[in-house]
Length: 163
Image 1 (cartoon, rainbow, N blue to C red):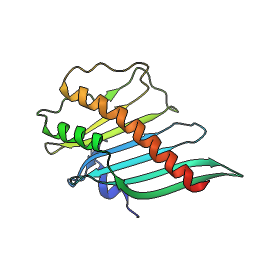
Image 2: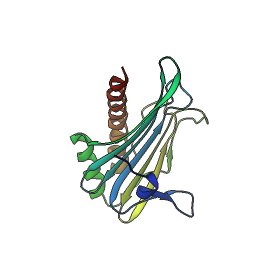
Image 3: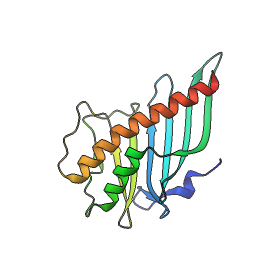
């Protein structure tokens, strides 16, 4: 499977991502300058078909990059939370959640299409579990945890391919 991220989302005039109207959510993660330098992009469309773009450094005989694009099934728990978020009115999320931020550390970025608006939400370094201030945040914080587990599962499955 080959796809271009620019066909799924583009940067608008404000510097935020604008998600294609056929997609409900995009998720990007970068480990920072860690040993594996993991980068994962997950893109979910209106009918919950999913595209994944993953790359990371392998430490076999040389330091090469593993890169792959593929489609996969969205876990049921994630589908359910996304559906609940889509049914909220209004969707109330902050632009950025972090206890601290450093340029070379792990980052996550969500774009959620809701009510014709692409909501951009960044996640920096969270030293403690954030406390939700509204129903949107409660669902979103649960979604963050599920995406962390899912991206690690995807990474582990890709590692099996190269061993």
